Amino acid sequence: MIRKLLPVLLAALFAAACAQMVNYYASNVSIRIDSVDIKNKASFDKVDLNIDLSIKNDNLFPVYITGFTYNVLMGKAIIASGKNPDNESFMIKEKNTGNLSFSMTIYPRRAGQEFIKAYLAEDAEMKIYGKVYATSDMGNFSFNYSHTHKLKK
Image (cartoon, rainbow, N blue to C red; front, side, top):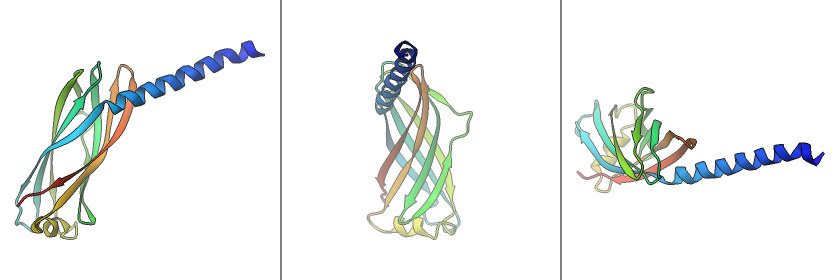
């Protein structure tokens, strides 16, 4: 009986060890917001927003970023959300940094004017958060990111 259960037990231990390793590798990938560029600030019809991210890979192997989602929060309203197109994946080499830019158009009327109100205030903050999906030779993993960015007039 024990001989029959031994392979199952070993397979379960191996799977658990692999899951722990993937979690370790996911923690070695980090995201930082480099810049937030706002165009048409005074417009109440639409505002163009460009966000530049740096994704740092501290692992000893390359990581392929296969997808990400983003949400932009100002005040108490989500003013933008979305995801990258499925065909825009890229590789970050080992111990290296990759850059990612995305642009969006925000329609302040739809967001309850929260964007304009928060931006016109002196200490406006924009919270950008989402999830990054990655794959490597060690397996697939995903991790959440969240950053608060102070906007300057």
